[in-house]
Image (tube, rainbow, N blue to C red; front, side):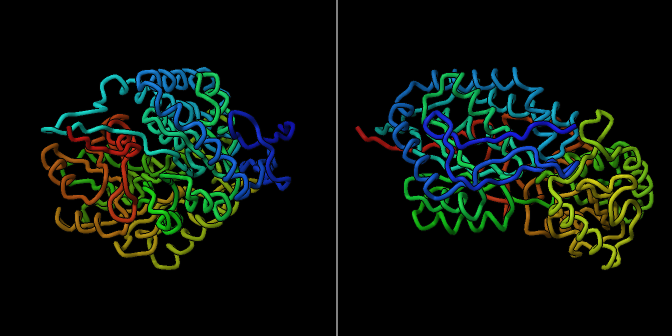
Length: 473
């Protein structure tokens, strides 16, 4: 159903700021309808936001950490109270199924913010080493740039530790999914965050993102996005030698050992390859199975995939909605066509849109088998519901294949506990799930190799936003 067009604004110095008269359309990928517009930000807008953050920094940095933690806790409470609004907004702007939007898109940011609020009273802000007092202090003004796949979680994962550490922030949301940023700004203000501590500048990566990365008044950049864009951010930030943390792409390997319970392990692997339509940096997009049991795995994977409903993301029965944009749909479909052209065995799905879904940015959930470890679809991040099944012979080859991409963000191992743990230790990746363990919001998350630098969540995530000073006396 069509609704009135919304117009968002920048948020600078605690109030809406119109900025440029040029606007960027926000499109519902399920319908192609323009649902909102945001300003096409400029370098001048970034300058204004940096000035506001710089002015607010001394007062916020001097605020007692316990009080900063209470503010972060109130932000968590405010987000919780607006969870349904957040869920429906994200479903409309980037196509996440409404059930996922409720259980993950809206719920994860609350859990993250609450975890940092709880960390405040237990964190060691100072320590004694011999005759030295070691003091952890805020870095200054943080620039944050986030993607569209989990638009609110990604920024809260940066904002909560940055605020707790005493920093101020200039934030650029994705122009594809920018609307929850305004909700977050309202919640933060209601939580008592002083004006200028949190600022939002809308716009594109080449304009606003590049200006944030290169700005001499910004002391740190935290970026989540593609590895290609991460390289550009790093290059721009290097001119002022600012700290850079990067959470980038992934091509995660899910190793299923021969002593695993195959029905459960394969079904779990499909579920973790397809969440959010596969638009997850940590999606388990490569399923590694013993060559002797590949056909068993294929049969189980196809049966599991057949239960996934693709369609209207506002329907609670839907598991996979559209891709976040038509441009991204074309990209994912191009990889499916590449897999077919390169000779991988297509066992489920394929090119084109699902039947009856011609009007949105939909792709067919797809599974390939007999995929070579060095194939394009096994090496490059597709960021869609495309699973590659790769056969291996022996544990050593499984580890070799798992470590063979330029990425190292997440991974998984299923099998007898001790053997799976031993394999997990050999994987060159920042986080490994063994036998479907629960997500731990306090455990560090981040990548090896070209999946990034730095960590998010918990104590390790907080430390990224702190400088360390040694005072001898």
